[in-house]
Length: 134
Image (cartoon, rainbow, N blue to C red; front, side, top):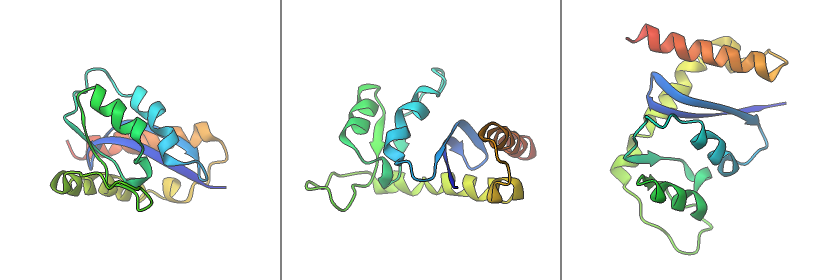
């Protein structure tokens, strides 16, 4: 009955990858699909992810590709790992992106029954944000 939108964004107006899952799906398990859908041309220095993506395999994958993982540790982690708090503050751009796309009623309420229809609307709204702010 619910849907999670996973997004990789450059800033609050430009998404580079979008992925949909069921509402009950765990965020961390969707990382690979989202990460693989990124263009090879996108060169990242760091990746600011929320606590839902705190897993050793995600940190290792990012480190192998030369990307600094900026992920706060979950409260149940035995060894608290350090992260760059200043870079993590930049993650609010992603939250602003979600705020902007959910200003569109079709995204906020998800009246669409089909995943493909909702995903198409999500891409249209994303493209509209890019055009509006360029």
